[in-house]
Image (cartoon, rainbow, N blue to C red):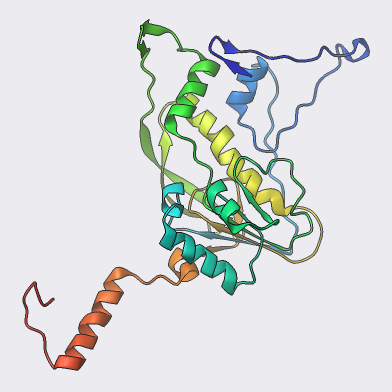
Length: 274
């Protein structure tokens, strides 16, 4: 666990008969830098193995909205999500805690409370709304404790730690090989970004894989309603407006102008009337 003095581990000593035998450490979504730092095993061999989904899995992801926690706090936006779920037979959902608890359903979970759960093993559909995102101050605190730099300059100030974000073009891995990309923000400091990968993207990855994409042979469909790019093989990219039945504001204004012209025959070109 993390303390103000750094990393403190309470690990039961290995039985004598296992000493000197190589250790295999498995983590489905861990970040290499974080794992090596915690275990103090910089020389350990690290292999990232990409799993192959069973052939009857369909994965869809939106490309034009992050669906943040603050967006989901809006009552009108929550209603959009609920209406979408109602129209589609109320499939199982993983989202932010406040929204998932509000749904008050046994097949709903939330980020931070789904790791290791087999609750959705028998499901053939899953909707993940949003993505895990911690407050930057939380990651900064963990970064100082794990990588050092927690020295106090004076009684009220820590040493500076670069927590700025930079724009990075990320690639979405498409099953048909026609990979897509868009720009996302990442931490410029590799330590902060490693912790983001481990705790944030790792948690989102865990949520997506509650559907057990590699197991079984029955038809399964995963809908990921966020454009946060994680280690996921996608079949189809979807416009978030088609999910929530939203229309672009520009299109709405054009329709309003057309209706007004049809009703009145003409419109005066003044700001007040327009």
